[in-house]
Image 1 (cartoon, rainbow, N blue to C red):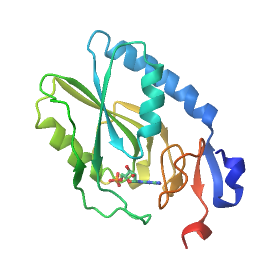
Image 2: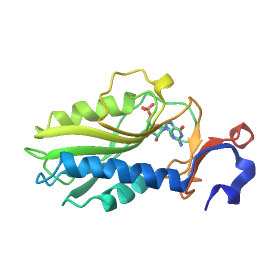
Image 3: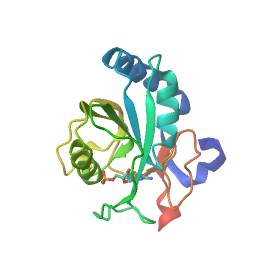
Image 4: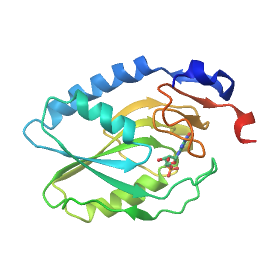
Length: 183
Ligand code: 5GP
């Protein structure tokens, strides 16, 4: 679905499918250069990173592997719960691997801070982050993000893998959820 299918549910469209494709091609070219000959392991964080993982990985011309983790985050609301729990762990041993964590969005950064500490303890050769979206005004943790898609205003957005109560993940654009949907 695209934003025209749900016009009343969005107060603003921030990035279109075309914007996202263009930016991912640029990031993919950087990843190709940085990881040439290194067979990186892309670690996706379920469920939000499904779209960015699928699209970023297919821009790459180098070999890469993929694995997935699920951690608890927002539940059904729009506020960070602060509770982080591993619901599904990786199947891959990270020892000596070049790991690139692929994230949908960094809001407070609390989830990712926990995740990075956990992954670093598994002795990867390198550990970096690619995040499709970031809300700089909401960040509460210092996180070094190597590749960033777009910065967002401090508002609740949906689309391109990001849901509200399970909806809108399949929206190809990204927009601000209209308050009437959740109030
Ligand atoms: P953080 O720990 O950085 O505050 O939260 C990260 C997680 O919260 C993301 O992976 C995502 O699941 C969720 N999240 C944060 N901001 C938004 C948003 O604007 N929209 C949606 N749909 N999820 C968000």
